[in-house]
Length: 407
Image (cartoon, rainbow, N blue to C red):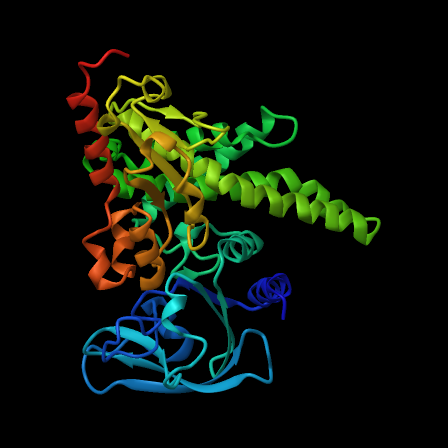
């Protein structure tokens, strides 16, 4: 089945069943770590889908046999088990069999989708490229930071009162935004509004400097919630009126999907810029280097990059991509003056295979990942991945060190 067809089928499957779960496959899920554990780890939020009552705190593991249809193909059906281990308080889908083609090591970082048709029958999908991952997430209306959860559910650890305050603030902001525009708010408007709401309601503005990793993820989550509310308002009348023909429906659907896919990266860049601003880091966004190349950020500025007397050691480039399973190669040649320097890549990607990480290392690509996502990477690479706070500290120190050079 073609990737686009498979993605469409998975989107429809997820939207027509009450329980659909997504996660990025970790090195442990794919078998890349060769640990004694086997199978794909599920969040404990899925316990009630397969078992009755509350998760036990002791005793032997409990099991449920399930029939799993793989990649939407009824002829590729496996007899698997969902097992909950009280001693480890974790749940896995097991019995894939040695060398199963669905969970090979190279699929670390792929998007895993589980759709529950019945407690004893599931459909499982896997998407391996940035485009297919983006298409699926856009199709079901979630962001990459909202995986490892049931689609459409809000499981952010937050008190009910704060959750209600945030929801109310977002709904009010969405209505105000739509009153101020003819069609749809810009990415800049959406991102700025999301940050203002998150800072005000959750009241942790200090985390811009003390914990930029969690701040970046939180801003991204809140922005997508705001985007979804604005989207509902924008298309409510259109959906209520209905469509005269299939072509009109397809045109509107394509417009919605394309906006969902395009805004994620731009919004993420805006939040990264806000983190840099909050830490008083100098930079030039979307600067033009050689041959019309355009890295997302140049530090401390494009003027100093083009100033031949400014030391290369004081320059830094940063690419920003929500996912980077195959797009990471785009960053290698974005700045010729830095061809022998690390190419920094900030991503929300949760997990990448050892082979891809080795390739990145050989090309001198340095990953920067929010700290909460580093756990999904192979153990031997975790210490090599920079946190957002590490990168901010690096560029700040370089800025201070080379401040005496003319600008």
